[in-house]
Length: 195
Picture 1 (cartoon, rainbow, N blue to C red):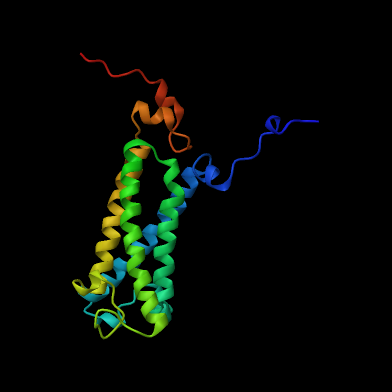
Picture 2 (cartoon, helix red, strand yellow):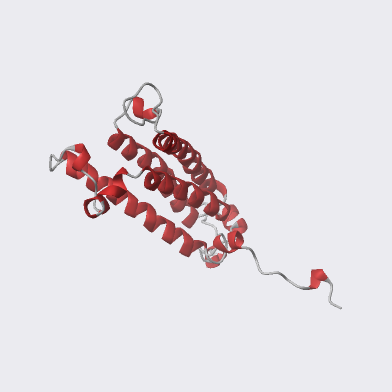
């Protein structure tokens, strides 16, 4: 009979995502984030350069599938996807990179709450804050297009800083890194001389 401790169980999905598959998972996540950014930038271009009325400025996907832009489920789903991605990929980050990734996660959590408020209003057929249409808290002060550009920026910037630091760990961070994003050969490099 073989004891339970003698049999190594395969690592779980989260361990693999943050270990041997971290680089691939990060690249896929970054692709999704950049594609979403592109949609917002196209929408901003349509409004401010082409002079399209805001309801008609729907980005690329919205041009072909107009109901997508008006679907609060789509916006909430993306906010939730961003939140889940930031949460699932966080264990693969260490040190300074983890701090910045956590900043993005916290901001995205709030962004998710804002979308949840919008979704609740649409689903319940009510509006909050005395507004004529479903409105988030920060949307009381900033128009929706500008607000989403702002939110995407303040989530994306710490993400980029985190990824930059993640790919350039110091020796202490490299020693505790468990993912495949950085080659271990960097740990064999001599320390810079103090000359």
